[in-house]
Image (cartoon, rainbow, N blue to C red; front, top):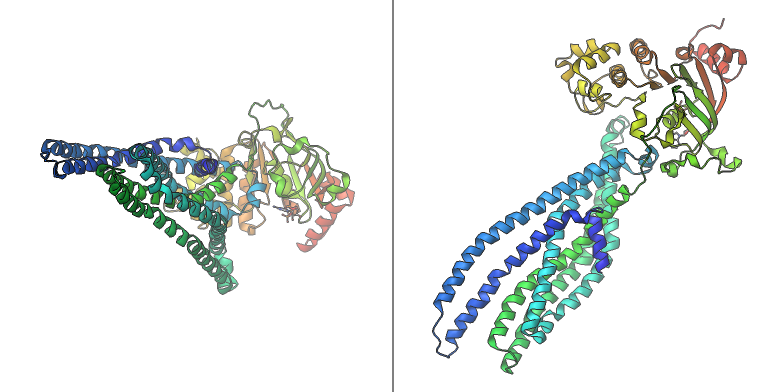
Length: 604
Ligand SMILES: Nc1ncnc2c1ncn2[C@@H]1O[C@H](COP(=O)(O)OP(=O)(O)OP(=O)(O)O)[C@@H](O)[C@H]1O
């Protein structure tokens, strides 16, 4: 039970229990001080009894006055401690929660893309938002309250033992029975809590999908179908929540009532003891007042045990996400002067274990047959510094996968990829990515100003540098035509701009980053001819003097490349210049002829 609770505390604070120690301390202090009026009450009652018990003693009014003044002073002290404990609770909770959220967001950023894809994004949002909120509540209310109740009850129990151990044991005996009921109830609840939280996760996923896919849902008139899924998830949530309440509610209520039976036992046995002259009246009164107060704490304690399980599950989910291995590497790197990118016997397969760290050490550990279903097989290529390398091939041949490996989104399963002579799996991802700019086909712009979206490539850039980059990317005039110019807000996902405009902003971003390597993933493929010309101009500015690796389905755009690598079914089938490949009569020439024919051009 104790190790269980330590685990719960560990989970709730996601591995940092020390962060709530001060909140717990102040709560215990505040609760102990809370007991003072009851002790004063006991003293007053005993003083009154002293003069009205027929002994003829006069009422000690001075004592009552002193106690009353002490009570006034006590109020001030109590107020101070309550404020301090309140501040600690909330300060700690919001601190822990915001530090935790940031730690988790940073952790997610350092996870391999493969791990992120294999995790449910709805679950991640649920953890970051809902489960952190559960923990906030648990840190502000549950943990300090639970610990304070426990300590107060233990101190009361021990204190009363010294007054009369028999009456003490009898008074607190129902608590043992109630504890057994609570253990049963928490065990029932354990499995249900997991189920309930997974239903909440399902709601999140459905809702996220519903909002993100709203265009598609409307276009294909799927409103009813998709809404039904959402509605079903909501109904399941209601059902599961009720199930938890129905199964555990009566047990919890029953155990609270059993605890209160302690008062009845206290009265019945106390009166019997009084009658038998086993205890004096003062002992009976002390038990009545003090034990009643501790039953209130016990009821809270019982309720908190139930809540703890719910919080612990949320904490476990957060911990599980934090335990996912991140991509690591060193920044202590000495690059060669020749900054080529070289693939040596690289094999790669998309799978759940793409989150392996530095897994290029296990070279050639698999048998040849195992490699048949790999998405990249035995890739041996060189992308020379300052040269333009093009990747071409049919759809699904592995072009984008090569760019993803160069970007360290994944590590190779076998073989090695080197940049300037260093195995990239050994380099710290952030440090390495300073060398790489990527322009994707689908540009993502953040809900921020245009200037900040461009500045994303270099946080320290000045206004002049931003404008210079936008000029080179052929987007400056367009930005200046907007009412707020560079301060214009871009809608979420950049939806207020056209594809070509977004693409040029992303190119300005890459120009500002000024990295030696540029990766272009079909940057112009979704654009109309007019926009394509503009974007091509911007790309020419971006790639000048850099190592460029480009994927393009339009072969005429890469005709002048220094090296064209042709892929098919995850393998390099040929490479060379356009002329060499045309003379080869291989796949490249085949693809070229098809494109020429489709464009309505004639072969010379
Ligand atoms: N995240 C992923 N998980 C599993 N398989 C994937 C993933 N991404 C790509 N693949 C598979 O890997 C293979 C190579 O895909 P890749 O995207 O590299 O091809 P491509 O040549 O860039 O294709 P296209 O020209 O159509 O973009 C394909 O069979 C594809 O289905």
